Length: 368
Image (cartoon, rainbow, N blue to C red; front, side, top):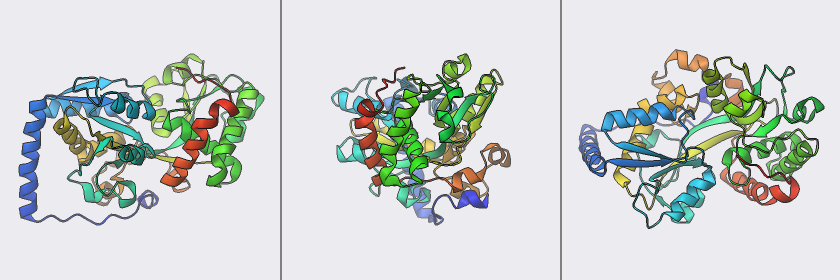
């Protein structure tokens, strides 16, 4: 547990006076009333088996009686940004109120004027380096990239990135997204590059592209988006994806097939996702209430049940609010203490290289 607590910067305890607490309660009541009047929340790119989102959405609906319109659950971070742009003048159900995107997409969306500032009640317990100071975006959860393996079909479980190049993994390895728009896939290419460069972030983008070009040339890369179904069917017996998604799939598949989840020995990359409210949200109060729901203790524990480390993890542990059985189900702390958390600058640089050069260097058209 001590190791886990070193993952993020120490956060000072928030102390509120009785007057402020009373004022916040009044504001919260007003927010609930305004959100209920709107009556609907439009979310996007939230698969119900991703980070425990199914239960979080259902608990929001049950608690506040607000309908949740779940748009395009399999959308990428890039798709979410495009959905805001495409619906600037649309106040209907196709316009997303909120987005959940890779960290590098948060500042970019703010710069384009696509986000609305809002600070949740638990704002001070979110680490400063993982939130926009004006409240335009804020970290929500994080995990590390892993190999999700169908152990019924793959007898020798790969332990590191170079293993994936072995002939025995022909027609076996897939990404969980398209590197030209998916944050998860971009980070996977970046992680493979870090393994090759010895954690030299400046060269990781190009090195990752070279790795996947070799993987594709050898016939090991499968150019479809890997999912639990394709893993189980054997179409993509090895999928590179966030550990929390792989672990959730392992639970869902219940041993049919047997699933192994491996954090590679090198090129361990941790990824932070962030929340933001659309500047053009048709239901802005329902969106703010959704953020309050997610960043409450209840919401944070909801993410943890889906194997995602919530952004307020340190604060929750320090206050003994995390059940021991949840901590025991998480991957070993060592996987996180050795992980690299790329800076926003490093993410932006690698994203620029990977998204623009994928076609010319790798030449694999990743499809759904």
